[in-house]
Length: 477
Image (cartoon, rainbow, N blue to C red; front, side):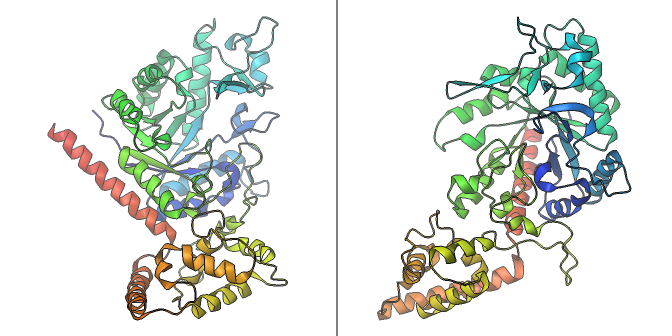
């Protein structure tokens, strides 16, 4: 039996990553953080809705993603991406969306037998149930895998799609809504693919299906499934029940957030410790872990399958990406303060007219010093200071002094420092000890941790070690 790989997956959302020619920086960053796989959402030409998941042409690429100014044709640009990834020690997987296509796809006219039809001769639109409300995707047309009179033709078409993507350099497939397609279809597709390409892996996305559907889909030959640990409340029994349902069939991959969910930073109101905890849990609970692009920088804006663009992040921290190299190290620079440009908004709310983010930092540092706070990593502190919707600061914006005092009172590492009031001898000793701890921490950070990415890398290393231990246990059994 083939031993499971260590699946440390970075999800590169295409509309956020930009054009194929701009992906090198993202791949380099993913590699430096310790990832060994990169998952890419659909890159095919979309239909009129523009949604990544509404595919009009499976053998053509999304015009938003290929570089019109490049001398290379779009397919060559994708091959270059996969070659670059391989040089960085990364394998690429791509979304395989075959349960539906765009409602304006030529396939509907050319191969009507492949689709489900309403009684009034309209093609069936897939739908789902969200909190008791029926949601219909009118930009999609549903394939009829179970009752089509041309099952062989439908199979050969999608086998051709798989080979097309493998020829571009992809080594794996995340199979969207896999449970909606018959097990027999997956068994044949996976088997025939592995006969020609034995190293290609298949991942089943089974979110939203019943326990029985999950079990049956998992047994169709998939190498991995994506689990639902992201939604666990940390005490209910259902997660372990799900784990036991498939543990003997196929290993699973967890994630703290995905392109379908609210950003975890937004959900937890900027609680950095909570964000780290959920990522670590996803890695420890599962045989593999997936992290969406932007998670490492605590992005708050959820990716949109139609509207997202590289420069539309509200905090503009996306400016860290691509082609901007650090002249000293030669490496791609990363942003250290993902809330930096929100300072302008803080200045406005504090009625600090004509104050720039740079001068605000200077003012803020001075005010903290007045209150006896040893300033450590002012940029990192600012990330917490202006996270006004989070747990770091719970005051109001009535005046600047209240802002600073509220920050000092609420930040965990400075609760002993008070609020500018005179300290007694015991408090001063506590402050002295705390400052010594801060100096030690500062030295440790300067030597070992220069980027937030290093924290993620450590988590990934821990996940790898855990995976190795799990494999040893399985061999012992």
